[in-house]
Image (cartoon, rainbow, N blue to C red):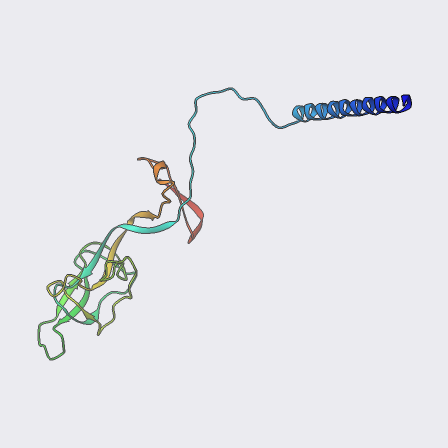
Amino acid sequence: MRWIKHKKKSAAALTAMLLVTTGIYFFLRHRNNLKGSSESIATVARQDIELRFRETGEIRPKVAVDVRSKVSGRILKLYVQEGDTVRQGSKLALLQPGRSELDKYVPIEITAPIDGVVYAALSNSNGNNEQANFPQPGDYATGLFESNNATALMTIADPRQMAVELKINEMDILKIKDRLAVEVSVDAITMETFTG
């Protein structure tokens, strides 16, 4: 019996010594990790916080005018092609008014309303901003006098001033302020970033 009590005391002492040794080992290991860590102490100071977010969008000219005829008719001749530079008043197209070739109205010339570059129409008759096909001779154009949804023959845009249209995440909309600095990168111009 004495032998069992002595064995229990020895086992308890050995367990206690093992727990103390393990505790000391982990304490010293943790303390050494703190000394060699990359954490540093900084002085608290008032500074600006820089917020960044990335969105995608489209680059569009700030000034773009859809060219529409006042009267309906067929395009007889085009004087310009997509990508041409025009001055205000330049001839763009010759239009034969009327529904058919039997109508003998005097052809009218469609002219450029502004200086700029000729593009395929940027807005279609539904009001959507989807690029349409460039008109061809023989195409029928609905005029402003006949319909509220007149056919946009082409768009004249001033490429000297461009704007970026973004679809901004609603979580980022509160971050936008007036005079916010921006960086714009364009897929077609890979090595250049534009600031504004």
